[in-house]
Length: 386
Ligand SMILES: Cc1ncc(COP(=O)(O)O)c(C=O)c1O
Image (cartoon, rainbow, N blue to C red; front, side):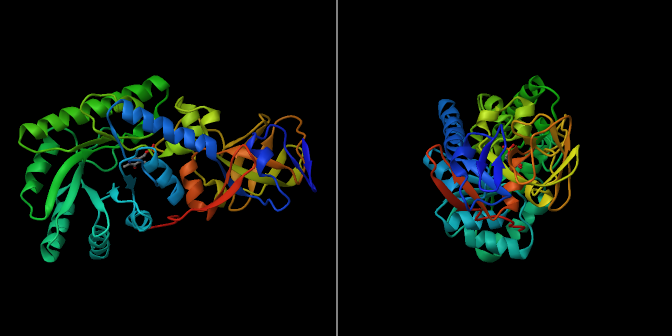
């Protein structure tokens, strides 16, 4: 343990700790290791380039201008968002090609979408006639043309029309609508997060790719010019992206990774670029510690879409005797199995279950590097609910 002021930096803390601890350091804090982040970004960009794929990362993971620009500089052709609000923030900071991978409905959102189209190339998604008709009505009234992708369900059972005849039939129903142009198809195989083994992840990913390519072939046989055949989730892109005919990948979580990706065999601890630093604030029983990172820092998230094998709310580095068993809003309850050297005031470092909601709960993150340089980045698009 290293003594720092009144506190101790717990054993097992990652090397980033050696650089970020200063007198004014406060907890809880979200830390990002710049070198690891850069490496994750570059490796995905290299994969996309090697397989002739357009890379359109989903920025809901980070919501930060700096990281979006790192992705674009590494070769991304544009970004994906879930919210118009995220797209607005990114467009205001120079991002010019955006897929909003979410159905857009309601006059207010349609007018924001129209405004966004004045500064960036924007595509949205539909999976039914109703959304296409709403876009068409607005387009007619305002002399606009909306580009859309048809969202296809390759197994997640969230949004999406089924591949095959259902997609074809939707295409026929919407292709005559004025102001709406179908430019491609997209899917998100998020059900890979519920896979029990790495082999199952690969199987789901390959299915994602094959279903989409077959679907694209069917639409083309009916005369549709399809520009985008877009797939992606961090666990699947490295496999679905290799199926000939897939043109685009949209990973999001890969910039940070997390315990969920480790559990799925998709990332290593070394590739996790985001950590939460917390302080032990109470030791009320021999077998119980309490830290200052609760649900409002770590999120009550145990992974997306039925992730399996999750015990607790993150892994405390270097302390296998600890399990984060409960989170109330500002308290994190840690169960101690056997002896621990941790004391009140000590700082610990946590790899979270799911990095995406953590960033959305933070106003800012502390970006560290191996040379002791520290920067603060704002989570510019945080909390955008529309
Ligand atoms: C439509 C869509 N595309 C891409 C992604 C990125 O997935 P991941 O974060 O697993 O990389 C998501 C994640 O929620 C998504 O919903």
